[in-house]
Image (cartoon, rainbow, N blue to C red; front, side, top):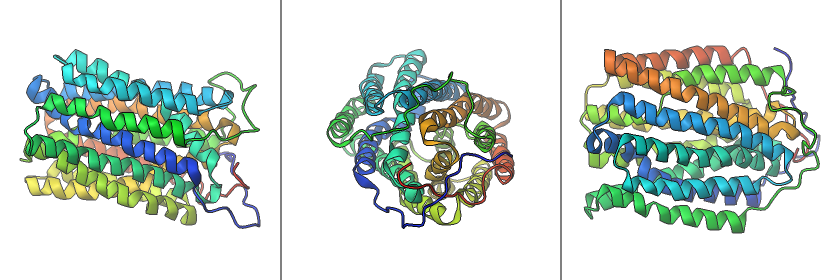
Length: 406
């Protein structure tokens, strides 16, 4: 493949502090995910038990939501490269999601859930690429993997607290499911306050004022090849709502679904920062290959599990995959493109993830309904294994570091 826009490190030691923006944006992610994850692990049960939806319907809801978000991530990332400020887009995205997701408390049919979830993901689509670009703008490239890992760790820590709150109020207080959705508005509001007060715009001399059309290249051949491989992996990476359905199928009670989800996110949170920091030292590719291979093995085992205890064990080890890949993939995106194209690059990356989400969830749900859960999980494992092999040919063996805060 042709060379990407890799950057060469200076002889002076790189700045190691993560800084105010990474801390503030990580706090926002933490609070927003408390809100989001109070709701998310309950949606499959809400759809299937309360509203009577099938596994395919769950795939439609989650796949449509993520694909909608993906298109907006591309547009908002490109726009943030051209604009003087990224923060207004980040704020708008969090505000939309925080307001609309609590409307699930009033949903009466699957169509309404689809509309609410899609609008929630619209908010995510608006904020994600500008936020990731702002993080990359704000730190030295030598600690880029650690910065993204730390942000993902905070996000996943919120995804631990949120389900625990949901579990407590459902199991001990007997609060109705719909009221839990309303309570989720409190941490969402706190996230907006932190974002307004704590995040500062990072000055960018290389703003892409005269950037070309949305589809113009200038990213580098390796970046585009990486996008193709990410899309292949995503075709086997269906919504994790299916894991919750599988856990219920294996005998995990509905009231314990938030607890199961919290355990998964605890492992993710604990492994994100070490995984990102390790990629700063040994390179991004080894971590991504290991993570995708690990995903394939876990999915094979999910398909062959027979008891509730196996669901608990697999949810725990599944979190390691995220530690190996979540922050690392984002750091690799920033490594491969020039700073003036960073927002658009994250947009394309998120588009690859999101466009694969709908067919992935539809295919997975269809295989599940027609051939059973083991066949569906085997398909996911096969796609992950293929992507793990392919990434070895497109990603650089070792990222090079950029001078200063490029």
